[in-house]
Image 1 (cartoon, one colour):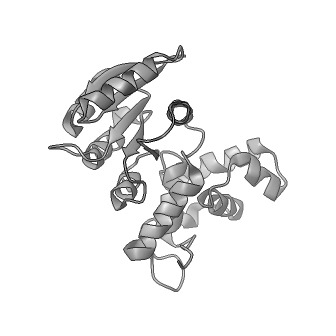
Image 2: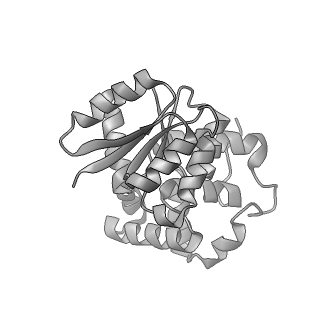
Amino acid sequence: MTIKVLLADDQALLRSAFRVLVDSEPDMRVVGEASDGAGAYALTRAERPDVVLMDIRMPGTDGIAATRMITEDPELTDVRVVILTTFEADDYVVQALRNGASGFLGKGAEPDEMLGAIRVAAAGEALLSPAATKGLIAKFLAQGGSPGEGGPAGPGAERLATLTGREREVLVLVAGGHSNDEIAERLAVSPLTVKTHVNRAMAKLGARDRSQLVVIAYESGLVRPRAQ
């Protein structure tokens, strides 16, 4: 299967470089380019890419708004958005993740890392750079978005009641940046069993992918940021 990729960045030179890189791979191709968020959304609806590489800072409709438009569109539920950023320690990245992005990647990433990220996002199997993204969310929730003391109280807390004890346990480990194989080893179960628990938790919590599970785990208070 060929992975369809859409590029959204206001710098034409970067888009050209990304296009050459993506189109050089036999299993993926660029299906469109946009220089702003509104164009990215329109092209996503027209081309139905598997992955959108989305810059955050663009004129007009920025990457955060465009990400929200894509992830809230019921006809685009299979599209994954990967945020491209110059500075990974950026509260805009957290906003993008809260609005449905599947992860983020630094613009200075090595070519193999970017291609691998596209494949991971297209497969929907795991969050990009899980430990780094988890740490980023924790940092900014600690600065102003984490719930107060006394148990889960943030957005999504009420939905946690729908989870079984084992699904909660798996959710905590997912939020810790652990892969299915690592979770399976910790819980002495098979990776397939872990995948089933993850998928059920995603369905119950309305999460598009693992990155959304991480956000919900922190915002609900199930997992708390460590003191810096």
